[in-house]
Length: 435
Image (cartoon, rainbow, N blue to C red; front, side, top):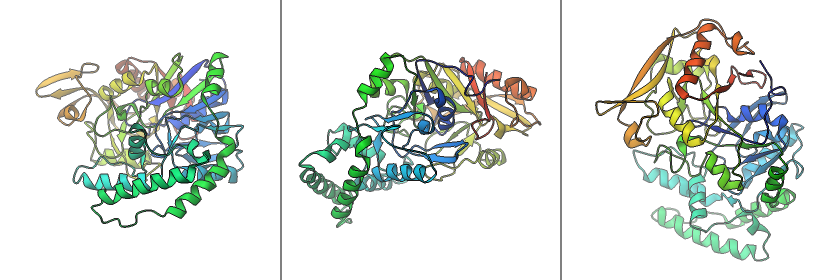
């Protein structure tokens, strides 16, 4: 057994997600960050929801890195940011006695800002998809990344230009015309010019000390051998290129995404989080989904409701095929298993160890693709194991787990072909141990 203070790591390490997200990255970052010199968030926006439960209480973050309690944090320029949400999270921390300033939070000036039109466009696009929506959070993430890719939109550094209001007016007019076209003319006056401009000016004044060039800070820390911890968002199976398209996010929640954001390529450890079962929120293929009383058990005992949206998550047996693929494209070196306690009391537990597709069996690591055109048509192959009647919640080491829970963890380790380094048995920081 070891706690966060006795578990040692050095150099640059990442915490990301091996599947469809929501697998407890925030808790793992909170567990490791007391040793970190720098924590960097590099992907996604306020569509991500990281829950941290420590001695300060419970916190639900969408933009603030989970390491904010322990060390300096950075929002890299590949994140997209809703400044209203960011300021709200800062105020929430301050109101609860947690200091937030330029001493512990730096914001890249090259971040693309999420504005009212991105959220409106997000909703219009989802409605236009008809019976097969992607299931976005409607927080404007995709449209903001689309603007960034098209080399348009407003970035944080624009707030400080002398001609900012002229630039804003041009952007406002363009986005208004675009929204009117997208809505078929229904949206006559979709945005309030004065209100948006007022909020941006307020954010500029409030955040100015924290807005600094971040690459020199990152590169200096890396050169000096400081402990850098990357905090991922979403999951590898939601990667825009390698994930389960089209039901994906708009960024790269993988090791490659971190390097693209920071210019740092030497990475010592990549800890990929995964529940002891599988879950996802929103639409898309899910071969092991359970729509029975066991699925309900996983939802209710696991409190499986989205941090960002409050939507009920879909739950099912552990999918070792998809998780193996996700860990591979994520660049994982080790696995962290969370929510083992949710399986307490089940008579049996199952692990998906293969798929049947068009009459042919595909084992772990043998699937041709993970895209929805494949997953939509597979039948899972299960290995069934005995469950355990004892509680795992009091375990603070592997040997303290019920014997069948130990066998289950070792079976997951064998199927994923990567060392399981952490096991979590509850939401609190102390309810996790290293192996």
